[in-house]
Image (tube, rainbow, N blue to C red; front, side):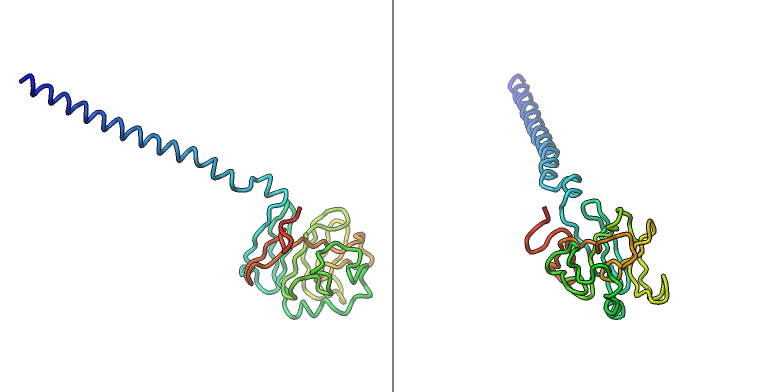
Length: 203
C-alpha cells in the first residue's frame, strides 16, 4: 500500500510538472507575440513619418478617363487626373493667355518640363494647392464651363485664379506660378507612387 501511494504521488507530481511546463511555454509564447507587435510596428513608418514625406501609392485603375482622384501626400492634396484625348488636345492653343506657358519659373521635376507637364500624356499629377494663398482649386474640366473660350482646367474659388489642364496659370489670376508638381514614378502601368522617383524618396 505504501509503495502504491508513493507511485500515485509521483504520478501526480509528474502530471503537475507537465502542466506547469506547458503553461509556462504557452505564457511565454503569448508574451513573445505581444512583445513582437511593437517591434514589428517599429519597422513601419509612423504617422508623423508618413506626413513628413513617406511616398503615397495610388491605384490608377480606379481613375476613370476624364476623372480625378485626390490622394494625400505630406498632408497635401494631390490631383491625379486621367486626361482623355480631347483634354490633352485642349492643353494646346492658348499659350498667349498664360503667365508661364513653358513653366520656366514654376516648380516641377525635369521629366515634367514639357507642354503637358507630365511623364505621360494621359496622367497629370499636381499638388492641389493654389500658388497664390494656398486654397484648393476646383476642377472645371469641361470646355466653356467658366466662359466661352475656357479650355478646361482648375478654378480657385478663394480669389479666382485659373489654371489649364496642365496646371498652368492664366493671365489675370492672382497666382503668379503654375501649380506645383511633386516627384513621382510608375513602378508599373497601373500604379503611381507620389513622392518617389528614380532619385528615391523626396527629402
